[in-house]
Image 1: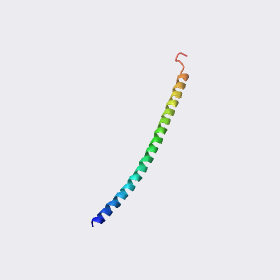
Image 2: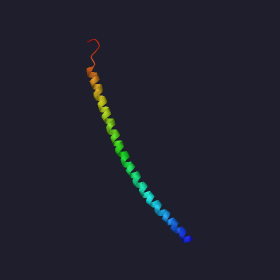
Image 3: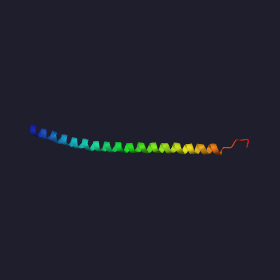
Image 4: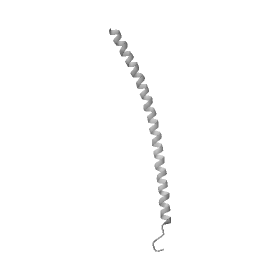
Length: 68
């Protein structure tokens, strides 16, 4: 009976080790995906700022003083 209990515990530990390795892979993949998304967000933010600068510059050029 004692030996069966040890074997059962060893099996559970083996399954837990496999699960931990699988979860580690998933966390690693998620971190890579988060890094890519952060880079994309940063790029999009820079593009939006650039477009806003262009739009603001065009608005300043197109505005003529009211007395003309």
